[in-house]
Image (cartoon, rainbow, N blue to C red):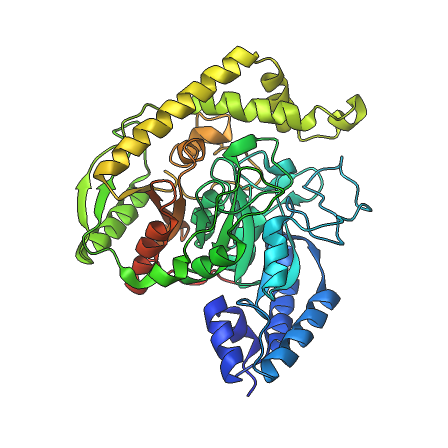
Length: 469
């Protein structure tokens, strides 16, 4: 039986795998559908920097043969997947949105998460757009231009994993690997109406190491929480190239259906009045919190005990930018995004003592959140206080913010603390733009975040209309 190609692009990874198992359609059909979708959406949102159609179809044909024998090679056999263009992928260059990288220099190895996708049988479709070296919360770069939002092409997809979010939202593969150093999975997930998880730091090994150090995480960007759980189980686990990786963890898919009954949930609508939240966002997030309560969770309004750590985050982030561009000569630096060049110059002026003072703030923040989670299983906040703004701008043109961290106050604190945090879609504003609710748990409690997110999907709270084509 052959399914309509348009319908295949709307299926989750779990649904595709079930269809392969039953023989309803093949990985070749699914891959052709995704490639057709990419051809249609690329002029609209610029989600991809590279598409490997021939290699993808070859991989899909090999997968189809295995499914005919009912001998899949792994848990993702035949599922189309994409990779953010910061991670290494054997045989292709990692351009990283920069004119300073070489298009003719192919990677000789996979990053750990990419290699595990490959080993699990996923069909690697292509590489998604990122701002230069992933430095900001929107996706535009000197090399590849601007990535638009599937719900309104004149708005930003968010960043830095904006290409991955736009691809998943538009059905160009149900699975994508993103990275998150200050919200770079959750920001575009919220703006594009998909699910995005920043796992506990070290749960997914990262190589090569990020210049932004232990702020940077790798995680899944998917159609729903069930797909994210499936992908997280594949990409988790030790890799000797990352000395900071965590040991083996229990499979999160095994606990996905446990629900939220009896969980203690703290709902913080504005971090104690520190954040001005758009009324439509506040209303949608409150409705999602009400859904969790109706499913049996104990919910109360409670704020985490910390002041905005933005200055310390900026010290850490700008120092990372300075280290990132340090090897570049004067001519190459002139090719950089002007905002990155300015950020790096700021970071180069910080002393080691100032950097370590920011580390002290980070450690105290982690201590406070550790204490907070002795009283609450989950913290729920808006993912962002706003919906998507003008594409090509680092911050809303009508706002007082200059830096991207100014409009992302709910995301970067949890990179500093290394906690698992996810963005779940929870509604649309009056302009039809997606809104996200953020779920945060204590370190190592990734399964708890995914359980709560899955409960929101199962209840219908996280279901949004597809973006218009």
